[in-house]
Image (cartoon, rainbow, N blue to C red):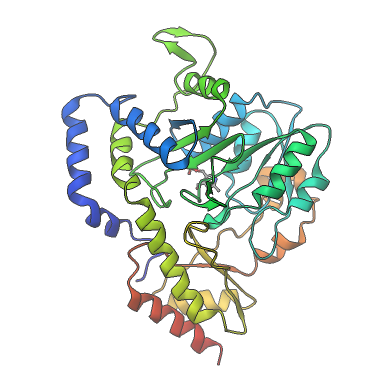
Length: 364
Ligand SMILES: Cc1ncc(COP(=O)(O)O)c(C=O)c1O
């Protein structure tokens, strides 16, 4: 079977370094908020080019803590993409605000800035662009909208660690950036993990407190917070992987380039735009095809995994039944056509060739 992602291959690559880091943590007896968390936060802030990086328990928590830290609450509206993982909208709901779903651009799968601007109301407090599949959303246009209407910009960077626009890394562009270190992400740990970035000191201080039971000084609680911390083991593992993230992202881009070389000219398939390896970090390689289900079934019969991210847009989910009256035609069409192929830095060239030959042969 060719899997969507092979986490064992990356562990094999970094085994000696990771084993040593894990064993040092086990020997230290310090598991929560220790030196690895502190060092990792500093290293991530340096890498992304932002002032503060505050780790937490997951990408979902990162979004939740950022929104709560920014004071978004009941009565507020937050605009986001209907074509994303549910966590983006869950976080909006957790703080009592209303998610307002808008459509995407057909070629980038990302928020359509014109649709965002039309959805702004006096209750809008923030926009959450999702850099889906590792491709940055149109941040210049969204920044202009955020400035014009005085609304906050919170980036969902769960899929875009290392991606950039004009030299600025995602997560360092908006008011806050929210990352996930779920194992299959571009930068993934071996459990759950997340992180918030910001250049706003007041927000950073609020989040440091929120993630640790509302406490700055032990057993003194200024506010009711959460238990949402990255643990030392995960931080130590992430520090090993962070050193290699550019190499891993470049290798993903090479996989995408090989797919594009073989598939771009096919009639029935629409492939993603390549951009540069610094811009698009290909968390997923997702094509569009009107015979998507047939394609997926043929690949499955040849032991090739594929995935549909995502089969149902959020405005059609039962969990958001009050949005079900919306008609967002681009996303509704794309959920019937999108198909993600296996992609990970170590994906062997012969597997890529096998997959692309099969797809090309289907066209005849
Ligand atoms: C776009 C997006 N946002 C948020 C999340 C939530 O991250 P986590 O699974 O770490 O909570 C994910 C992860 O699956 C994601 O893909």
